[in-house]
Length: 532
Ligand code: IFG
Image 1 (cartoon, helix red, strand yellow):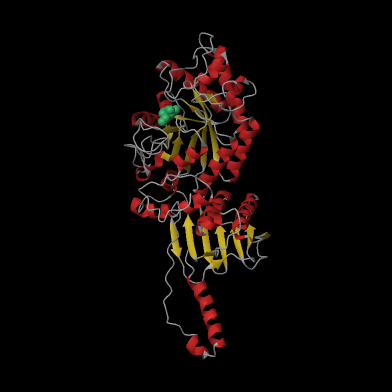
Image 2 (cartoon, helix red, strand yellow):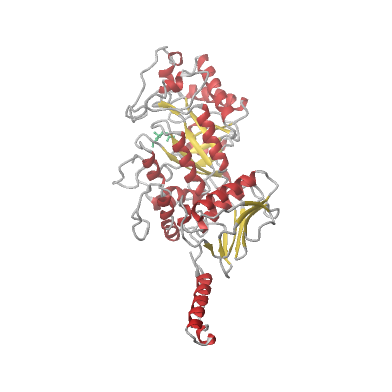
């Protein structure tokens, strides 16, 4: 961070003081060699904002007199102001009160912005006299606070007061996302992760303006959400995981807590109950779900196993109605993800019948259906969201029915893919995905014949058959997630790996300061080894 003018003025004052004490004439002492102030380097923001202009002049400094002021029609803005003030207090040690607009001379102000209506956009102005965050919607204000966070040194992430000068070079930013959907999927079924760990994951997403958390809540190896009308799904179906560990599940209270934590950071939770395949945990829990009435044993293996719900049994649809009904009540977001992937044990005609019935259940609950690309093989309503992961033909078929696409290409955005041959965790069936590989693609050109206006955005997917601990989850996520966030948010023109990798390297001290694990890929110029 550039300290030019402020430090120079302090130096000058110091020098003059010393010079006067030494009896030197003030003119001689006060006229050091004139150096033209070096323009501060543009800050290393990720995702890169739409416009950024360094406006010069003396920096803004957070001091004991700095307050956070708020003036916005939405009551939500006050909570964002409190979030920002709380964050600033920790590392600066200053009081940083939240005050009403106009009452503090030296303030960081969160305000409305009638000029640039946008769901998530914002404008950010830094001058010597103050900082102004403007946005029409609270989500835009929140994104502006994440940008402000990155304008301060990494020491600002510390949980205890640091001495760093808290200065920001004057600038003007106008910003808004290219795609509305920037997501991250976490598979909590193959290995279970606690609500606390999921909330930490949400904190990583928030730093990079990701706005969707897709939770893969059920699979053959585990059922991870309490369903009151079918209690054994969680108590028995959630009692183990890949490798035979104790597994676990979210009570409905814990799931609601995850939803709240995410909503405060303007992240929508999208729950997935995978069907008709990937259902061994459910069938093991209730024999009546099995076609032959015999519950299979719990499954703790790594590979997918051929299994299907019994398409022509009525109880199957009562089960689905009950489960999705409780899930809908717990999920404020508009989407229910019904999976639909890899239905190898479901005959194609049965699959089409099944997806048709589930679609009606989802719509009956007032929700929109989202499914993996295979749901395009069935009749889906226009407006269904289809998540592309491997087969362009299936995705194009879904588009032909009026679906909208979210891109999770397994060769680019599957964070269970190893970085390289030395990565101790994860898979390699889609090939290695190192940081550069995961960054060099574009959602508007990735699938032949599918352009910008048919794509809602991009989403990473972290499957956890071979990712056991939350440290491993962080290691597989960082440093690839910031790249996916930039792909989803920033303008594509001018976006290059050569320029991005330098910005990315400067974020490592932030992750270290927060105790987040990450992979120090040889592709990134990390600089001097930081204590990790
Ligand atoms: N494909 C399966 C996942 C997971 C993945 C691991 C999808 C949609 C392979 N389905 O990806 O359950 O096993 O990379």
